[in-house]
Image (tube, rainbow, N blue to C red):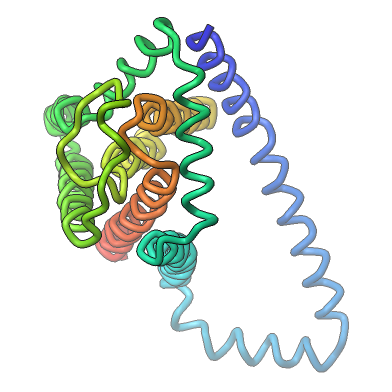
Length: 277
């Protein structure tokens, strides 16, 4: 049953990304063009636009870099603020946060069944350091063999750096895990933030970035993005189901992972475009 739900979620996400995003992008561009035309009909704004264009013309080759940096800083800033907010609530032992954590943990405990346990054990093993490490190693070797050493370097540095960052954050916050007597899998490290959620998002997000550059087909790109979302979601849920993480550990792991992924991706993209310039 859970396998069927996973496949249905993948197909739904793929359809959404494949069909909806291009339509949203076209609509946004049309609205922006219409708004620009309406503004430039006024003489004063038209003059300002011409003056600004003339002054910024020397920076025109760097415009994509500036956009990438702005988007990266926005994503990293928003997700970083979310991580800090959850960390602050956790350290202050917020009653509301503890109620949410306990409620989700108890609900997951009540939904346990042999089939669900096998399903989530597979995904939690996939999200271990060994599982993700093998994926990164195999794909990095394939990329190097095909002459894409820089992509392989980006993938390895992003994954390894994310793992080290997660280890450091765990030591910094030193949050205890839920009652291991009720857990279906043993874990001796600290809980906050979840390493499975954080590193899986980093690894699969980096792989989606590689696929975007390796394939010109929007169908392939959207399928990779949808599959990555489903895998990260299943791995994250497996940690709550197995009783080794609180919900807030997962949320913090995803937020921290997105911060690191945005940082390394923007850094590599800027480096790549600077080389082209």
